[in-house]
Structures are given as C-alpha cells and as structure tokens.
Length: 285
Image (cartoon, rainbow, N blue to C red; front, side, top):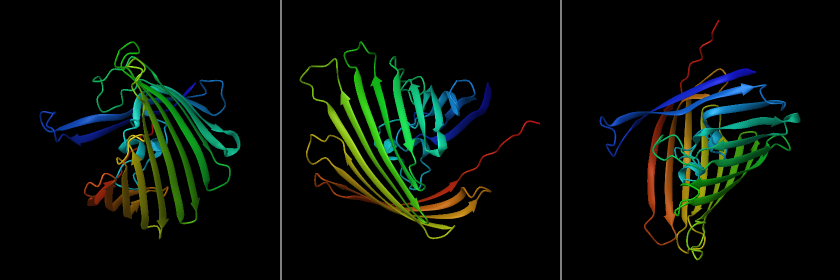
C-alpha cells in the first residue's frame, strides 16, 4: 500500500450577510488521502476524505469564465463532499472512470446539514481518438432521513463532449435532474430541471484566449416561460505560467447577459477579475 497524495486546500472568504462575527472566514475545500495499490484493480486509486465530486465537468473546472461550472451555478451538486471513491484509467489511454459514495453535506456548511442517507455516483470518460472526449455521469442524491415525510430524492445525469484541435476547442454539456418526493402525496408531480451549456474557446497565442459561452437553463421543463438564456463573451490574458505552461497569473474580462423567457428585463454586467494561482510543494528528504 502506498499513500500517493495528501491534499488540503483552504479558502478565505468574506461574509456579506455578517454571519461571521468579523466578516471573514476560512473554509477547507479539499482534505483527502489517496491510496495506490490498495485494491486488486490495476492503476486504481482509493480516495478518502473531503474529495472532488466526479459529476459532469465540475471536478475539472478551471474557471475559463468568471462564472462557475454549470453544475455549480445551477445547484446540481457541490464541487467537493465528504466520502470515499475509486478512480482509475481504462487501458491504452482509452479513458477513465470514477465510482464514489458521498454523504451529501458539501463543504460550505460542514456540520449544518447532516444527511443520514448516502449519495452514489458513477462517472465515465472515453477518448476514442485524440482530441475527442465523450462521457457521462450519474448520481443518486437524497436529502433528509429515508423515513422522513419530507424526504427528497434526486436523479442527476450529465453528458459531456470535448473537442480540441489546434488552437480551437469546444465544450458541450447537458445536465438533467429529476426531483421527487416519494413520501409525499401521490399526486405531487416530479420536478425536472435541464441545462445545456456550450463553450467554444480560441487561443490566439500563448498570452490571449477568446471564448464564448451559452447556457440554456430550464428550472422546470413542465412549466412555460421560466427558461433563462445566459450569453458570455470573454477574454483571458495570461501574464505568468509555470514550468508546465499552466496559468499562474492572469486577467479575465467577461461580458455577461441573461435573458428571461417570462419577459422580465434582461440583466447584463461587465466583470473584470485578476486571478493568482499559487502553490508550494514540500519534498521530504
């Protein structure tokens, strides 16, 4: 058995609602152990702790737009959660898989929303040819005790397609969520939510990246006039990169507009953000 990674990431945040006495706080987003060669499965890793949620693209989202990953923005899943899971690679670099069990608490309100029911997830990625990645995720999530009258069950699905050729790439994602109340009145209808997100990216050079994003969010497909369409146009300017060419310091500019099908007034905003990604690796000799 080999422990391959011990990870912990801390997030500083301000509290606009003044729920924290001094207006600021500290959250732990990742705190997990990776074990290699513990299971009789070749090239597999067992992860235990506050770990990534392997649903859709949320676990690999690098914020190419200032807005978050669709699964996060539209409240499908939390990006991290307490649990354990097995991850591995399909032979011949054909793809990867993840199987995990979570408690559904997330990381933002630790100890505030204890869930007695476990949540189950399966994720698969396939790379049939270079530059093309296809995949899907499924999660069964529940809230409240399984015997409670207000128990809620969620069946969540995600389908993704990635295409990258030269300086051009395209990410397409479809999210689908069905909320049901099994202990409620039989006449209580299920609520089905869907999201379509498409994001093309064009790298002009090593410094400048142009992108666009189009989201179609339908909170209840059985209701009319509740669809929201969000359009984002952005530019990323990379100032510093590390030895592996990963961005470390860059400026993001996004123009974002949301249109509402119910004839509400459009909302638009211009966002500017400076991102600085820093980390340190300590080698024990």
